[in-house]
Amino acid sequence: MREGPSTRIAALVFMTTLAACSSIKPDSRDASATYGIGTPLNETTIAAWNIDIAPDGRGLPAGSGDVATGARVFATKCAACHGARGEGGLGDPLVGGLGTLSGAKPKRTVGSYWPYATTLFDYIRRAMPYNAPESLSADEVYAVSAFLLNQNGIVPADTRLDAASLPRVAMPNRDGFVPDPRPGQL
Image (tube, rainbow, N blue to C red; front, side, top):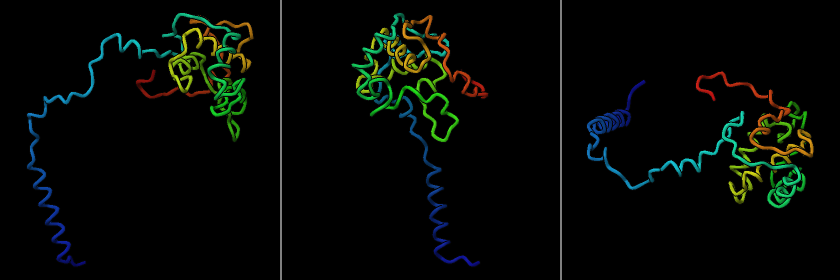
């Protein structure tokens, strides 16, 4: 196959560009420049964001809540999106679905999918209600968690949850997840 003049010109332009770029040296004056972006964080600011809850309950705050209180909080702050009993609406359904995960249309709900009740607490605390995340008190989050666990048949109607009892709740899908064998896992 013969090379035409346009191929040679393209190769020459490429080689010239490559040679020109290799001679560019970074300006050492920019290495220590500050651009006025960001703010150093103090321990108080970090502590306000450090609200994660481990599956074993580490990080759970003081407080408690029961199913009846949870029903009232849910009605005022959650039902607009999730339905009166958590059956779904604008937001995902939160109840039902037990036994559907291996089917063609799995229904991932609090009762069918979530492996730890502490994860439910953590998610509600951080992300709900959708229009005002992190606005619920610890007592309200415990109460809504108790209500949803009751709606899914996991805890009885007289349940009161707190930092000691929430991690002990046995979720139906506790063993439904495969451990991550990679190093560095939690």
